[in-house]
Image 1 (cartoon, rainbow, N blue to C red):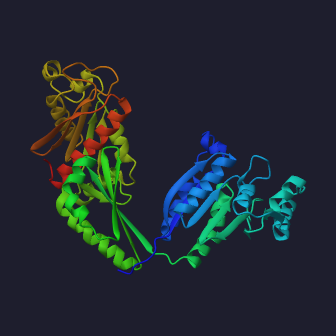
Image 2: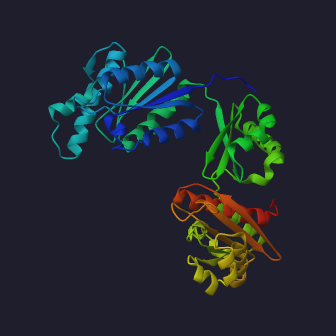
Length: 421
């Protein structure tokens, strides 16, 4: 593997409005994605208010960490916009009128039938050490600095203006200046196992990863994503190296893997059902139709989703779904016996290959010592056998509904693939 120097970037988002929550910083997210595509690693993203001391401190810290410092915001002509004067202070230079920038601002206002005011003329005054970068969509120009082997670029905070500057000027110039490696990501999607248990299973494999491949754990609601990132000069070789490592780890955790990259659990379920030409139906109590909603968000779900019921009240579990009245009375709605009958009966009612059921105490009230809030039973019925599972979840109602949805879909996946425990 050819050795290369990792190129690091830091993104500085400037403006009190970001810290107050009045504006959401979508710029940093987009910039990170674009840099990743060309092999630049973002090591930090920082949000700073309109404070001289905070901005200068951020400049100094970023210069220590990164090869490339990209800034957005604080470029207006008013007194609270500090980026430009503080860049001049940081680089120990003056600010002068740039005729080319003035003409661009004048043209911008003329095209819109507006007068160029004295305050707008200030937009054309730039630090003498910067290279003027035209902003075709606004009045605040970009400013490019190269000092002490570092690259700095200041851009407006307006997203569409920033994106055009990045795409037309910043990305091409970075690629021209830095010898960049390729970066290749692949995400393994797992469900049904917690992060700590997963890490224990794969610790030997993880410790044996090649130096140019890194692993990150990305836990989410009821799931854990394993992101493998390869760095190198040859993209085809990187992809091959990462795939080899995936094949190794599959031997250890295959029963927990449901997909890769952007595939969701409900998409994976749909794919499996289509491959086997199987149908599914749901009987949902505590989840209130949430699982059916997840399944039907996928285009083409009518190929495998037969329908569902939400018999929330016990009387309808009995009258519509046919759950034995004695079971409801003796065992309760939140019981293994109840979800078994719910799953088996909804499967028959909708002529499905798989019938799924959920019944539990979502909270925040309704629990007691024997069955506290967060107690949920789920079941999956297929021809000749019904699999069940008891969940002990949280005190949060919405979280319990979402976690139950993940658990039900995972139980369905296990039944389709024949991987039930």
